[in-house]
Amino acid sequence: MAHEMTESKEHVLPVATYLKVYGALIVLTYITVQVSLLDLASAAIYVAMAVAAIKAVLVIAYFMHLKFDDRVNAFVFLSSLLFLGIFFALTMIDLGSRDSVVDEEGNFALRDSNAAASAMPAPAPQPSASAKP
Amino acid sequence: MTTVSLEAPPPPAPHLEHHFADAGQQKSAAKLGMWIFLATEVLFFGGLFMAYGALRYLYPGTFTAAHRFLSVPMGGLNTVVLITSSLTMALAVRSAQVGDRKMLPRMLVATLLLACVFLAVKYVEYHHKFELGLLPGRYYHSEIAIAGLPHVFFGVYFVMTGLHAVHVIAGIGVIGWILLRSRQGAYSQAYHTPVENVGLYWHLVDLVWIFLFPLLYLVK
Image (cartoon, rainbow over all chains, first blue to last red; front, side, top):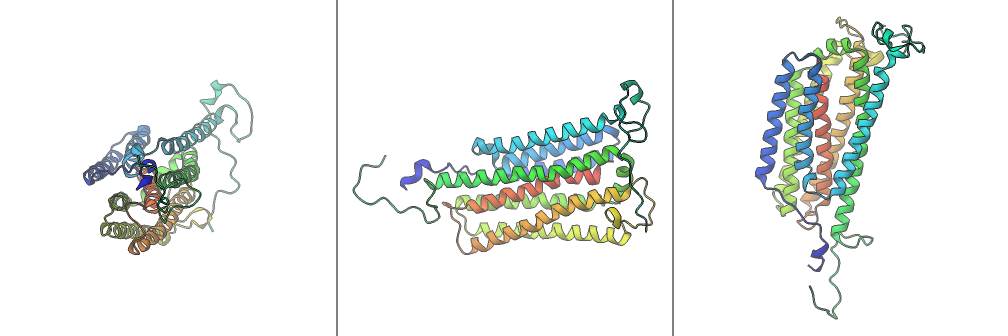
């Protein structure tokens, strides 16, 4: 066909590659569950998210073909992760620093950071938390 | 390089829309469009993951207490089901790429069946929660003693898995459509862009669950 020159190159992966990625995903799922049974306290969520991220990279790179695709697609996807990261970071920084600007009743009151350690985090005042009929 | 010829140029491929220079450009544009859509989906679910993060930060005891009512075996099963469906979907796309017209519908059917298994397991899980009264927000009416604010946890649980399930249902719809079209012989080695794009969507549905499962079911 005369249009071959400008056809996008079709990169076909062997079936074996897909099966290997699948195997890795199943193993990682098993690891996720097993690790959750250990008592890792506050590290648990970070370990779980790290394993999930490895699984995600495998799905994105191979099943979704991003490793072999036009770079602009990867750029689009990675930029969504970047903005998600900014969203998470700023929100958690806000929540995490509420202690130093909010007093026990949840009112805005600047205080110095030394006093923050003694106070519980104060969420916004609940209208009526109880929903019991 | 072709020599100059006085013959008319070959007619463009039937699937080529007039506003694209060639099939390669059309396909690149379609794929880019789908990746942009997936970026919006990432942010869509991202909002809910942020809600999870914020509420978990504020009410850690609630999450520790309430998450025990989720069935890890069922969640784990669903994770395996979705990962397998991603494999069959990737193999379906591959069949289209190599022009294997028998394997394509078979892999799509396999993906569809696995998606239905996922929904069936979710139905069983939801039914169990309805029976116990473990419902979101103001519909919560369970007599089980759960520390903290369980209606908040179940609010997060039902909205996140519910929105995900809506995406699974939509996925079943589009995969069904692709299956129908593939049986009509619409896809070939030269043209199978819709199969690839539906595949990308389906992988995203899997990706969301890959994060949902540990956060809701596993992390204490």
